[in-house]
Every structure is written in structure tokens, then in C-alpha cells.
Image 1 (cartoon, helix red, strand yellow):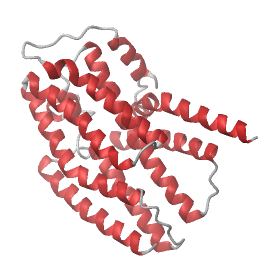
Image 2: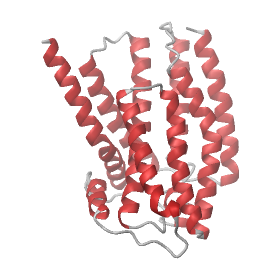
Image 3: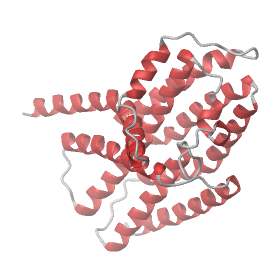
Image 4: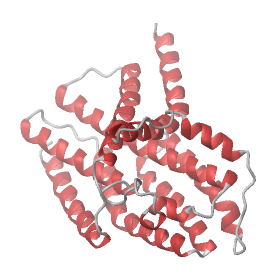
Length: 296
């Protein structure tokens, strides 16, 4: 019985590791399309596009150099390491900001080396989001790994929900979702991620897109595990490895659907408003983290 349980647990983890990077982005796009009254692409369209693009040779611009040839490989590699870390937790989760930063560095380096105005503007906005979002991400991970045992009362439950909502805002910032960016506009000038990859084509574009899907799935799964950890603490749920893996898998899919619905029914804000929002969120999360530690 124990051997069967272990085998099933490994099988679920492996399937989750292979499928979630494509399912999270696919479900998000599908729900966004349904919310806008469209049928939308198939759920696995991202996988189909990645396979199609990776077979094509990239066309580099006249100013391309080292970063144009290697940045996509670096981004995909660090994205894979990030995804494996969140999935299997083989090291401290405090490595997550470093890995996200390396993915962002590779993408920004590619955009800046080509020297386009769109790429430079997208790189500047990407760096701005990282500078203001990284301290909050570290704070979330410190609280997540502190192994705090909460008392099951209304105050701690309220603090936990507010902390989860604050963490969700940082995930929206990391993925350039509303209110920080609006992928529905199809105007590269107003988009962060797409503006940096205007010059990418072929397998270069495929590897960058793969890195983005790895990061998306990693953040969704991280938030799901954060929520499940609080559910165990507050409601005394019995945690079996198989059920926990299934709940994490389903939670990541559900979170993708919620973000897709949010993306289709919200708009981006002015950039002069974003530093204030992230700064207030940092203070908010810091106070909540202290209250959670005090109320353990």
C-alpha cells in the first residue's frame, strides 16, 4: 500500500511538472476569450506554437550579438530550474527571486542589444516592476518558509487572507497583468513582455515563450501552495501527499482561470501610479507579516 502511494505521488508530480507550464497559460487564455465572448484558441495552443516555432531558424537583426544568440537559452534554462524548484522544493524557496531576476536579465539584455525603441521602453518598465516587486517577493517567501504555527482564530484567518491577496498582487506585477499591463490591447508600445521580444523569431521566440510559461506556472503553483499551507493550519485538514499534489495541481489551474477572468475585466493604470501601489503593498505586507508572527 505504501509503495503504491509513493508511486502515485511520483506519477502525479511528474505529470504536473510536464503539463502545468502549458495548461496554466492555455486555461488563462481560454477563460479570457470566453469572458470576452470569443471561442478562443485550444488550451494546448501554447504547446503547439512552441513546437512549431522551435523548428524554425531565428532571423537576427543587424545589431545582434552575444545576447541575441544566448539570452533565450539562458532564460529557458533558468525558467526550467525555477519551475523544478517550485514543483519539487529541492532547495530553499528564497532562490526564487534570484531565478526570476536571471530570466528578466536575459530578456532585458536581448531587448536592449537590438536597440529598438519599443524594446528599450519595455525593458525599462520590466526593470521598474522588478525593483519594486522583489522586496515584497522576498518578504512573502520569508513568511512562507518561517514554519509559523497559527492559532485557529478569526484574526489570524483574516490576516492570512489579506496576506494571500497581497501576494496575488505581486504575482500580477511579475507577470505584467492588469493593473500593471494590459495584454488585450495588442499594442506593443503599451505592453511590457511583448515589447521586449519584437525582434525575436523562430526558436529564440519559442525559448523566451517557454521561459515565460515556466515563470507563470511557478508563480501560480507557489500561490496555491501558500493557500494550501494556510488551509492546513486554520482548518486542521489532514494532508496526504497524493491529495496535496492533486490539490496543488487543481489549485494552479483554478488560479489560472481566475487570473484570465480578471485580465478580461480590468484595465491597466498609469505608470506614475505603479510605484505608489507597490510601495504601499510592501508596507501592507510587512505589517501583515509582523502580525502573523506575533499572532502565532
